[in-house]
Amino acid sequence: MTGASYPKLTGIVESPRLRSLYEIDISTREETTFKEDLMLGSYGPIATGLLVASCLFTTAARADGLNPGSLLIFPEYDNSPGVYTVLTVTNVDSQDSIYLEFSYVSVSDSGGDPLPCIKSTQTELLTPRDSLTLLTAAHTPSFGEGFVYVFAKNQAGDPIAFDFLVGSHLAVDGMQNFSYSTNPFTFGSPQPKGTSTELSGNGVRDLDGWEYDPAPSSALFPRFLGQDPSRQSTLLLIGLTGGAAFDTRVGLEMFNDNEVLFTTEYVFRCWDRVPLTSISGFFTQSFLQMTNEDPTEIVGAPGIDSGWFRIEGISASSSTTTLPNPVVLGVLYERDTVSGGSAADLPFKMGSNHNGSLFPTSSNGSF
Image (cartoon, rainbow, N blue to C red; front, side, top):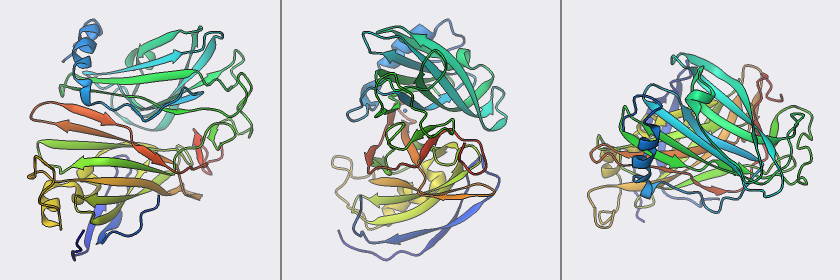
């Protein structure tokens, strides 16, 4: 790796769901020690759509070494016109039935109007070795988009440890003519099977290592391609510290194909889906070509630049409280607009962060 000097860039990064603008510096420096993507007119043709879509998933990611859990986080659902989100949850236990609570955290209603991270719930029962697949537009018809978390509970409604849940998410966008699939993020519980996971008494699901496993401290995305009209990637972000009233500031460390490091920040509330180019101009093909890049990469396609990036929470703030080191989950969606191909990647994870919870609504983030 050889170093280079670049001018300091100043940009405005705005989440579409935040009214305020955040001015940040897009600074560059040499590498230092690094710690740690059918059109469906009604529900009737959905089976045909799923069959066609399944042929497109050769590049869709499956997470590294996922285990069954007591709590699943599906990173998105979208009930927009022409878009179908299909969720599956399976009880792999051969002995016990289990109640599930589906919690939809929504940033818009079914008409597309913004909502302040409103939570709505549905309860379902799975018998031993049972599997439930549903269309979110039928399960939660009043809401538009956001994310979903599902946890095991007993008949009385109390959350319990039950590390036998697995799942899958499928998105089919008939309007844009692309499809992709991902697994959920899974969290086991260290508590004995069938016992309560409500240990803190705050009424939320804590990813603290006691109620449920902690979240990763940072997420690693091993590849992005230089963005241009033919290559368009979107980063989905979920803030899991503080809850509905908190804006989360996330830091990004981005490396080009010659290990040159660039940094930026992005602020969002609760859940966001944002093009990489709206986060930083660094991700564009035109900018990468101006950096000290490796002219031999991508091997076999040297005219396309690439890189990788890491995200980590910096702070989460409400009108009354600021919390350090927030949990941030992310998923990268990639789309080739020429071929119509698409893929979705869960990141690799590093470290442990015990500050996550699902899903507080108070201004101090405790309940």
